[in-house]
Image (cartoon, rainbow, N blue to C red; front, side, top):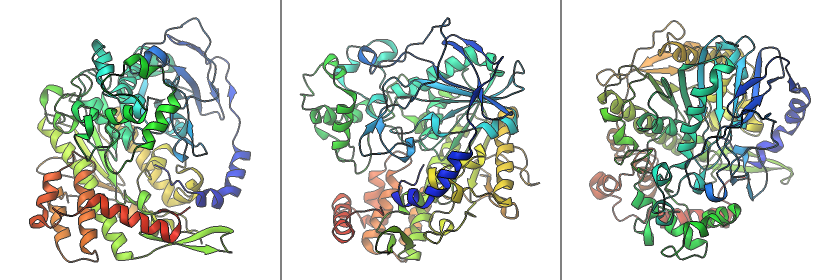
Length: 595
């Protein structure tokens, strides 16, 4: 969700300094103590509009003997909860967690949540909105998000949570599951953490002024994916009443794929068999105790030492948290249906967040002999736009439209779709944000929160303009309406009709003059046929783009890829071609991405 670049950090250092000086410090608020099963927590605030309750433990630390087990409730009602210096779950350092360096950060003791509510929320029974952060299920933290303005503006209580990530959140290995019973036999420990936090919310949220009978789960990217996981899980009945999935995806793997013994599935990377081998252990003879005794950062080093070219096994159809048919198919099965209102959408330019720094697509011209950040520009405008357009529409086709069609078949009656198109960011001499990023992945979050995202470039991506404020008001109101009523309501005077198989309405969220309802809903197959037509792409690029479209966002469709355009790419070496391109970029520029 973040543009990870030293360039943007250098560009924004003066702004960051000013922001750091102007933010008011948090202070305790008398009379805001809430007694929870986890302990007593006192609210803090930086203004008069909202109260924050921070770093509330909802489960015991999943470390030692509790590593790779279902979360255990944290009950210590007589204690006083104190803010922690850090609650980040173990992950690679990076901009997503707002940490620096090339190493690993965080702790296994990370199962904490925050609550923010309007100052008038006490005992009012306000709608509750439960945020699930993104980051590919390998990175991210609750602390990145500030829903203060949203909570105040829409009079809702917002809960933000952490959950285990990467190999600690998802692992399938005989030494772990074969010795386990009950929920401990699951492979999806990160999603079990989310469920545990939802259960905690049901038992405790009234003390913060929230209504446990009106809980909306919402999340972006991996968070949207986890919203879908909550919709299909047999364990979540009654834990939430509405769902919003922002830029979601539906990919899941089988336990056999997640183990991937002897790399049985060559297009899967970092399966547990391979991970254990990378740790220097025998995957056939190692024990759960031996794996639990290994230092967390050593596991991470082994995990990231392995190549990752395509798909890492994460969400797993274990038959416990996620049905054995997988997320995509479970969404259309009535036996798993929660029959709650669902809002799902994507962004017009989803993939620019990754392509915008890739030297294959973008130039970085040196400034002052490299003393300043490079000036960035697109190498081939036609190729860049074509690639962004097809990949982003495929994201909507698979992650949004197909998922909603499946839900409709399962009997869901209130389904809504959106596309975020706003691209009126501030310009910089170093980079044209509207041209390079546009309506990129994660760009909509700021408009729901009412606060900048994207770390140091936030003030460019979310400028203080009338247009940005108008769309903020629109999106806050729509999300708030949905939490209250299950319907987003009208937008700029235009009704927001439901998404139906026979009428796939999508609300296009943009500047006020460009807001409209769109009925275009091309399938993945139709988008692939567009690539068959002449374009600026060469033959290798056609195959690479087709590969990306069929192997991302939903279940990989390898057979469809091999058959595409009468087998044009059946013998094409995707991995080899990618490696050749990367090696050429490194030889020319020293790296594959701009610094």
